[in-house]
Image (cartoon, rainbow, N blue to C red; front, side, top):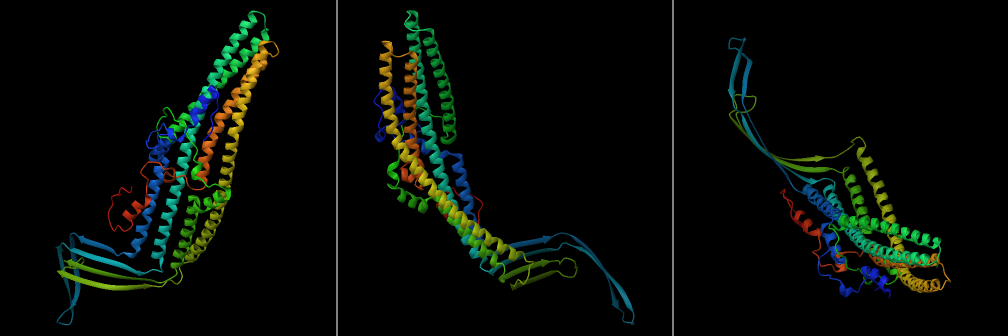
Length: 474
């Protein structure tokens, strides 16, 4: 917990950012607490919901691959009207020949059923199924990465808004102080205690302070818009936020090891290697024989193209063995291409691990710096307050100028802004470290929200043989 400044102005600004954990309404999904904002972002963020839909779409790759094990059945029917006229030459009993013509109309109709079952296709179906399953796991890991990103963005947007609100309040208070300083300086000028230069300096400082208020208002409006984009609702009166250090490892080596082992980006890259490896097997399967069996049943009435056939029936059960010999060389090119892709994904896995390691070390350093910076900035505020009080007293007896007082006042304001920024950085850095090690999730944070479980939809569609309705999947 970050220690708040003792002075009233700094305390008001700091209280906007931090408070004890007991003051947070963790169990209520409201946007006026940090946990509430995280819950709303987890439930409603469109980018996260889009990734969930993409994961459900990837689940369908598995039943599509499993379809290679199942028979294919088709029913065909033909019918219509035909007009025929046939003239044939037939031998005559007298030794010559005669011509005979037959003509007529009929309505042929035929119906048939064909079933084809693949018995062996070079293990392509098995490898496609394993490849699809690896794609599902990779998609789930990508979804987990998206969850981390959205939660981190939500925490950052929340704390940015708190910071900018506190800075805006500080700048407005500073303008009030500068207005009073200008009034006192004018009064002293009227009685001849100071010069016109002192009045001009006070007016300049007031104008600068008002400019800083306008800048703070702009930053605050921008943070409000970002909050609305990430969280999905307009901000209300935001409660303080607290760091989440308790969920992170206690040492940097442990954090690096945890990040490399559990970060979902690394998991996604590992599954992508499996996907690429199976693609090599699928491509190699095109060089192996293919064995299938086909059964068919057909029934015809009034055969097509003849007038003499009233009815016919046939049934067959045939096996087909296909041995590829040479197909133009494309199958060999596909194998080489798949192997290069496999090598690329393995290199991408190394890159991802290095990136995760860098992010963990960087987040760790930022968190340690933020912790130290809070104490330094609070000490700076205390020193600036003492200095300002001393300069004001010395100015009353003529030992300091108005410029000295204004400079000390601005130094104090800057120090207070630094405290607010340091408190903001402290909270955001703790969330960044938790995301870098792969533990920024509703389960770890203890958010009271129904957790989206992608395996539910997967189990609903994996063994589905038919149907077009999308299951709920939640």
